[in-house]
Amino acid sequence: MKLRSVKQITPDLVANASDYMPIAEKTKFVEYVSVRTLERLELRAETDDGESISVPPIYKENPELKRRYEMGVFVRFYLGLEAEQVDDDPYMLSRDDYDYAANLHIFNQLERLKQQRESGVRDKIWDIMQDFRDLEKYLNNEVFGIVNAQNDILVRASNLIATRFGASALETAMQEFDAAKQELTDYAAQKNV
Image: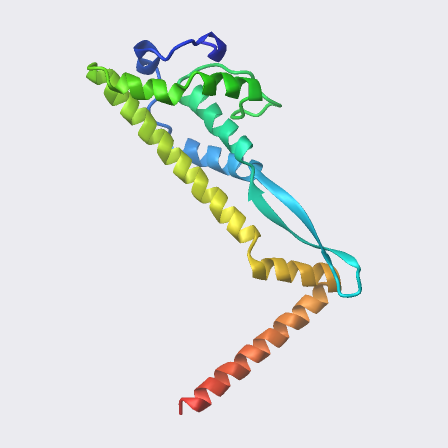
């Protein structure tokens, strides 16, 4: 059934929906989507003498892309609906399809269906939503980890030294850092004697 033909989430649609995505498929989705929802922000800094220099970029999440991917997997995998494919991307929804699905208020409709006395439908919705929330958490944790790793100040400082002064300057700086660390360790050991 095509997404655009759905006007309302029905008990029959829920009955035919998938309520569990295997962990291997979740991992495949998360690995694919997590890097595609990041934006690289190029930065420049001005030196004391007024020169503009490039500094290592920072990364942030693109919330629109993330929502289009999440709604895409919900519509396609969990509800089993067909939607227009965007650039051969198996998970992404087009903006129009996203807006159509969001305007259906799919999640609100599912919540209202849970209120019905049909326990089979209610239980199935609970299972679908729990598994989807698990997938969302998995994706959120992965994106958070990548952003933090990419934006780590030491990584960015190392990249700046390497790009500005060359790899040998980074190696020299690391050797000097190790020497200073050893001196501090030795000094602390002498004080504690």
